[in-house]
Structure formats: C-alpha cells, structure tokens
Length: 429
Image (cartoon, rainbow, N blue to C red; front, side):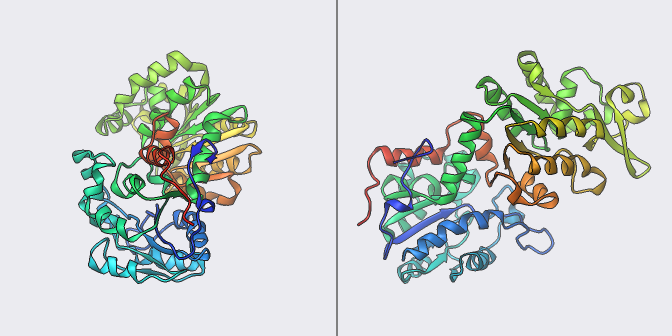
C-alpha cells in the first residue's frame, strides 16, 4: 500500500517472528571533539521505535549503520556507545561487534535469537561505503550485488528494513542494493520523515514561510528556486550568510572584511543566483535590516543604512542579525500556517551572537502553525534554546532534506519504490 505518497511496505505488512532482519537506520551523531562521546542523541531516539517494534515482534535484528566519513574523519569511531544508548532507549540489550561483514560478524548474525539485536561494525570501515567510493566508482544498485557487504550479509537475512531518510541521498550499497533481491520495508522514521517533508512541499498550510540561514548556503540556494517556483513558499526569511549574500546581490556594500571572508570560502559565487532569484521573486524575500558586530569585545548592532556610511563599522564581520530584523521575523512567524527552518541566524555558539537564533527559534517553537526544523546544526541550536517537543516535526536529515525540497529524486526512495513496483515485497508468512 502507499504511505503518504511513498510506495512502500511497512513493518505491519510482515510476519516478523523468528525472521532475521537487516536493519539500516541512520544513527550518525555529532561527536564531542574532546571526549569522543556522542553530543546529541536525536537520531538514536528517532531510530529506537522501529528497532523496538522489530524486537517486540520476535525478529532477530542485525543493524548496519555509519558514523563519520573520510570527510569528517574525526567522527569515524566504533558504534559501541550507539549500542549502549539504543539498549537504554529500547529496554532491550543491543550488542556490538567491531566487524562489519567479516567472519566474526557473520557468526554473530547467525547466532542471533528471537528478540535479540546486534550492531555490526561502522559501515565506513568499508571503502565501498565511503563518500569517495560513491563519487568515483558510481555503481548502479544492481552492480552493488558484487560488493563485499551485500555478498556477505544478503544470504543471512529474510528482510531488509531501511529507516535512514537522513542518508536517502546516498547511493551506497547499504542504502540501495539490498532492495534488489530482499523483501523490503520502511521503518517508522523513514515514513514519518517523508510524510512531514511531503506536507511542507505539497500541501502546506498558508502562509508557508522558509527561514534559511547558517553557513552552508549551498543548502539554502539549493532549495529557494524550487520552493518559490513550485509555489511551496510564500515568503523566505534570510539570515546568516544567506542573508549577507542576498544583501550583496542588492548592491549593499558590507565592507572589505566581510566580502573577503565570503570570497575566501567561494561563497560569492552565489551572488549571481541571488540576483536572479530577486529579479523573479523579489517580493517573496525578507532580508536583514540590521546586523550585529564586535565592538570592544562586545556585541554592537547597526542598521544597513548606518554602516553604509560608517567605514569603521564596515571593517567588521557581521555575526548575527539585529533587533529590528528579529522583531520583523518574529511577527511574520507568528502569522504563518507552515514554518520550515534550516540554518541558524548567526554564530550562536558564542553568547554574543546567539540572540537572533535564540529569539527566532523560540518564536517558531511557540508558533501556532505547523513547524518543521531540519539539518544537524539547526537541531543542535533548537535543542540549546528550546524543547524539541515544541516543534511539530524535527527532521534528522540534512543533505537528503535539501535535495527533497529542491525537487530532486533521492536514491533511497527510488530503490524502495522500485522494489515495491516490481512486486518483490511479498509478505513473509
């Protein structure tokens, strides 16, 4: 059956008792640089309901998941703590073995009893699961049948369950290959995440506003054209570096220091796209009217008009939005029917620059409209200043979310729907 527009089968479509299940969640978590401990358990909390349901149904569960990558090697650690946290969240023992799909992992999967679970070693230990492999080798899901992971684990299991919407943009064997030959189901989180983002993209309550900021502005610029052209967004409130680039596109002079900061990070390339967006949908944007900067070690604020004629102010970096902008945005948020937010308003980790993010996040948390927050940094900021339960939906996805709202097809969704359409998902009875 179809779940919220996603052609997929779920756990309810299968008799799970005594079946060996390969469960692929996304529990990749922020890691404290000093302690090497998990700093935020949001993704683990989101994965727990599916795992608990599998275990309570009498399944034998082997989990495969990743932590870190070659691009963030400092976060590439064993999944020992993940297993402990999932044990606490599910109330069931979740074991861990530091082997992905070798002889020890295979023996551990074969030894599972009903209602038992084990996390196999970090998937990113395998070259075929790292980002560089995906970009350079470019295998199709069918060709991935020959990868070590799939050859080793595929014959051991009866059912593949994917709950990793946050990694839905990844064309990796653990994400798209097992659907080629195994009965497949979507987990609780996958269905919920897809449904929440679908409601924002397709049937938002009006007015629908997007609050876009942060430092990774490729995410914002990846979404803006699509959500405006499709009519999804009625207004886009820009903050962070996104807001600065939109000001530059209007001809506002932010000063040599700010422009060099953006140029050194290749962010000025987005100015031409910003000009194009303004030309087509200028009335749909709101921009910062004032900005915060450092003066004698403390926070100071200036309006756009004031710093344009004050060279001394222009020699600063602008690290947050100001009070005037905050007030304007808070009023718009209070009247919105749907609010999607991605990216903090400033460098919120420093108390001097947290005001914009704190006030806007609190306004969204108490807004009467349907609220969705997405992206790792956005969720971390929300957890710092608000209660996550006050948002209608907290999305675990970052890159996948951006691609989804940009109108791009996700490899995981294609794999799940392909399996469904080919009628490979016959209930296990």
